[in-house]
Image (spheres, rainbow, N blue to C red):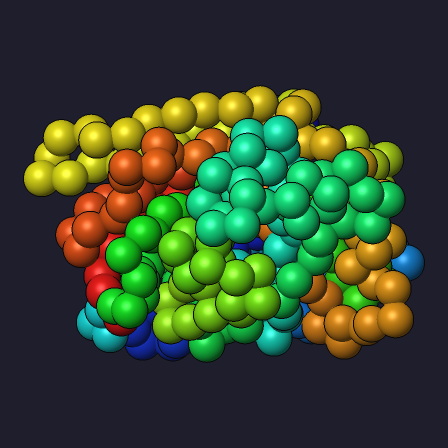
Length: 303
């Protein structure tokens, strides 16, 4: 997927939210072609490859281009910055798709976590609602940890992006923030452990893939680094080839008895789990990188 374009959302003080195509480290504004992700995803139904070609053409004709690094700053109303690559889409997540995730869920569960062992081996994957734009932040924004939780971790994940026709259009980076003690107390508390203010981070954009590439996992390494007071307190990595489920399988279950008029993002599970004694603290900096997509960095706040 060399030179694959990255579809991004960003903010300009004079014009608000914009859509751009990042190629080789340069963002080319394409809002004149697609004013929103939702509009672009709807138009791409049944014609993903044509839509990508049209975006490339719009980028080539763009009157607004600038270095992507110009957006690398915390969101502010008077500064250009990244926005999460989601507008009207729902964000969902798959759980227990890595062996280490199964072990971690069993470790945190007060009853031994047999339910997690079963779902790892089951035909039906665990898929749950994670966020909308309201609870989602982009690069360099602040992610939240619950003030009523004592054990909080980031969950670095590869995300699948689908259009309303349930056709995959690309990959993104996700941080599925999680309160391990709340989920561990009872699996029925999962929504409280996962869905709250600033509980999801996405970005920096969507790595667009052709219809031919859409059934194959991105051959990449996911890396996580957590810094506290400028010192690294945890790091880890895992290959995407360790994901137990296939892309068609996960998209099939996401779409069963459900529809997504603006498309959706499905996070595909976390395979990097900090040790049991670790918990995030306010002002920690979480950095997640995936080969070919880029880096998603966020500072932690208590919410």
